[in-house]
Length: 354
Image 1 (cartoon, rainbow, N blue to C red):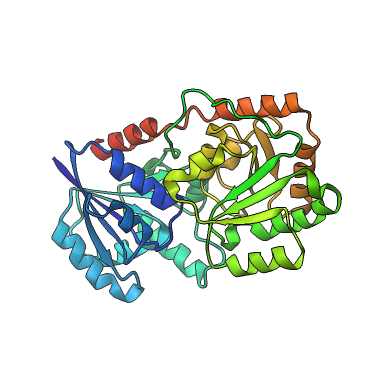
Image 2: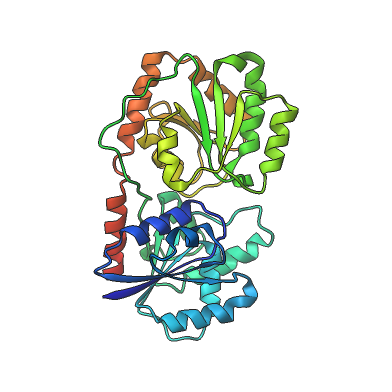
């Protein structure tokens, strides 16, 4: 039996955390004994409590000595690191140590532009990636970006995120006379929510009673989002709060169209979850989104940071004939089929033993 140590040091819960959760839950426990190093009081830790060995640590740069100590004590056969913070902190903590048998990093995206000293973090991240055995990129776009930054292409394998797929699309009444739009995600700058809200503000001048938008999530921009909604009297927009990760797919079945106005992405889980539940997706042409989302086939690609384009594409949905929207929903469901959890787990398991 091999020992695997996962390291992810984000306190919030997003795509990277879901990815780690799914890996830990679905890897063969007869082949692997799993431990996790995570940020103190993280959502991921609470979800996996009592199921595996979890070591919670302070994630500041000044705590690398403790991270080094924990890694030494665990002495794993495989270290699997997720997120830039975990990558460069792990690299610093292991500097000068004898290399472990295998170190892998999954690159879920890129360092958010909103971070202070992002260029410094970028330098440390790339340096750390040059010193691991294997890199998993969640999309071809992420792979290409890493190569542009100087990472050896031979090290990189593309393994897209995967989810539990439905065998067939449930029969859900299409709300074509009043389409129901939905957003699910963190309330942070890279999700592009204010570009969406600006589009809604304009859309309501003409279509106020002809659609609705529910927004699920939480994050540092929550008060600003609520203030914008109230000040502009966007009464057809509702903040629905944080939805538990395991409930997202169930919630999505209540809607017709998923909105993904991101300005920065890797390969978002919500894209695949939405398509797999038959939702048409309006998604920004960033990251790996266009690898799955085909314009006017299973949704519409959006120009990033462009409220006018969001407005125009939402208007097209509102005015779309029922048969056209139904066909697009069917295309959405069918296009999700390659992105199943079983494929993701098997591909990563292969790399562990390569």
